[in-house]
Image (cartoon, rainbow, N blue to C red; front, side, top):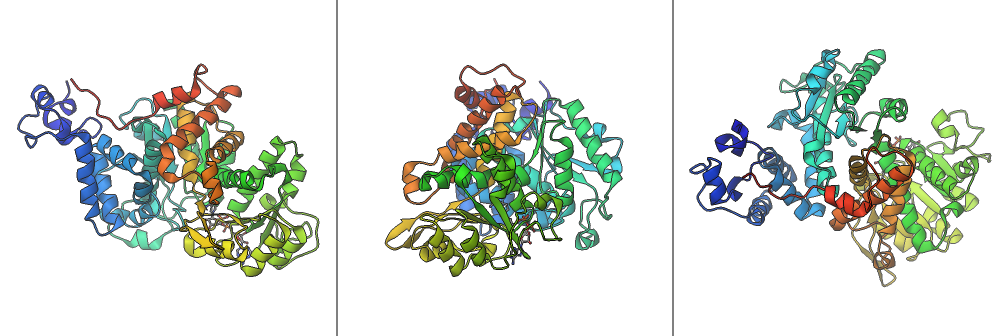
Length: 542
Ligand code: NAD
């Protein structure tokens, strides 16, 4: 036995530590007698103790810190707490609280977690990555800290994101925590306030760009592939200028994806599939008008187009049914300010500068708001949508709530209860025309943990767009008729583990069907996924 599997060292080993839950027999055999208060607790009592402690803390950041300390002390108990009530704890260990934790990273730093790769260590990435004590890492979430949530460049403080996101992979879909590794690539920061802060923990230099940055990313990807050949790399919160080319460069070379781009598009597509269960229409018949033509709009538009292709619509026609409208109006061929990634969605049409007019003229079945500008789905837009559709699909997806293109109450009231509504940020239920509506929130958490679990279980070689379409369909299929009757088109977050395991099984079947698995096909995919899912239970140590 080594020192961290027995005696005092065992109590400092978060993976094996049970704290007060060590039985009297275990304490005798593992050299723990005298090191713990005499009366053993059950895991259930430990969870209750943490719940009680959390309930007395006045801020979410303090709750985040308590949970973060717990993760460093007793991993099983940490996940038992998270999984006891995921809907409550997700916003504490991830957005929005993690944003504040990243901003204050250098002032609240506690135990180190994950691997930090500074660009100054170029040429030695293998040596640094190999310091991580796990031989077969299967899942990496990596950031370079440049576009952390909506908060911008937080430098090395971005590490809170891979750590928090990986907690959700485990808590929401059962990806075993021991195979997960959070990584931060420190290429400097352009945030002057951070660089001037004496407590800043990252490189005090401007961001490296261009060939040197690309070579660093190359070295990272190659080293991961070499050290951990079954590992999937998930890129997180990179600025668009890097996120898009990085995904393009590696998506066909290794197992990798970008949740901001692909997961986000999938959750919007899931919302559309869910809405179609209410409107009783097919995807192929939809015409979607986007308010906004940025990365979110074009990513969603492309995935919807790909999904339409699967229903027999030629790609060019599918793209022409996903119409963009930005700050300069309708995106049409004759415009000279359209970037190549937008141009594939440009249509042949006269200019239109007013969004409500665009709705009246183009008669979309759905409008998706990804403009970052609040209130643009105003009364005349919603009324125009209600004029041209029996059940208008209205998705204001801009985050946070203060930027939502409209509120749930406005969409239901102005459409006289006919809107099929979902939003990027949560809204409480509303009663309009005597009926209660439950607005759904398009949250990536229905997609990425399930994707991670499917990739982990099947040891997938690649992550394809088709896998995200499968995930979107599976999410929509999980919405009950009862939920649909209240207008809710996403599954409830309280059932996230069950939902994720179902979605993961659907993705896994697709992975097998397309020859992308590195393990033999499971006899029963759902059972195999469940069998491999992590459960927060103490393992026997004697
Ligand atoms: P972006 O900055 O790349 O794009 C914004 C787009 O909106 C641009 O095309 C711009 O021209 C357009 N725009 C700005 N003002 C406008 C106006 N007055 N009228 C019409 N168009 C206008 O941003 P992005 O990365 O694409 O993200 C957009 C928003 O979508 C963010 O708030 C993000 O949080 C949200 N989002 C939500 C989800 C979700 O599912 N919940 C998914 C993706 C993105």
